[in-house]
Image 1: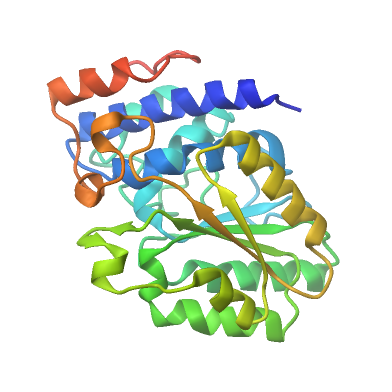
Image 2: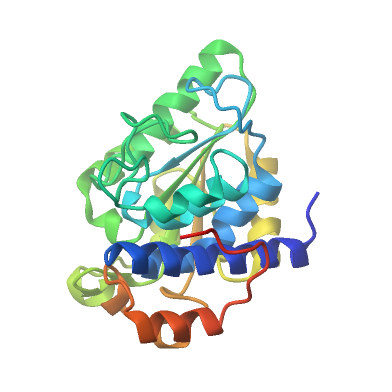
Length: 282
């Protein structure tokens, strides 16, 4: 088991990777990626049972699906540090013929990716299918999925939110990145989401809340969510994060949702983030 301090060090390196990937590509989505670094780090280095040798069907291991696929830089970094592919490959992010596409894809055969994502609203539905398949196969492992709060404006989200409790898909843990920002501005201005915990509870989910930029809260809440599985209800975690977390000029604004840093900004951002596992070569 990793300590909270060890996980925090990994998350710091992941944030450096996010800045460097998007800067090298001059494109990408650093804001939401930075906000979710603690969640991904905890998931892959503490919470999930998974195998870096990678089997597409995920039998006898936990599975993860990224619904808001535009935050691929954080996922790629964590997969690389978990041993799914060489860290040096992070330098190819968004490059022609790279396996590290701007949104996760499967046709390049990148280990760790089981479904193409980025067409928002679809990830929970896919995860439900995987969770139900596990039940049919007698596989007691869990299925995790991350979705964005702006993504909740997609109608398919709420179809899946109705379907899972009705069918007692209780081996499923959905986390909502509740940062209050989306590409066009604050969610409160684009389309107000209202009382999300009450909405998910009304649909029949077991609802938890956690501080997504506090590693201890992330680990404790995810472990608690695991304890609640198998009791007839799917689990929904409302994860409070700050977009751009870890870099002062990027925090709390939608302006870095899909914009890469220039040379000066990159240097500033990296000066705020501790290098703990070694930067990948460029």
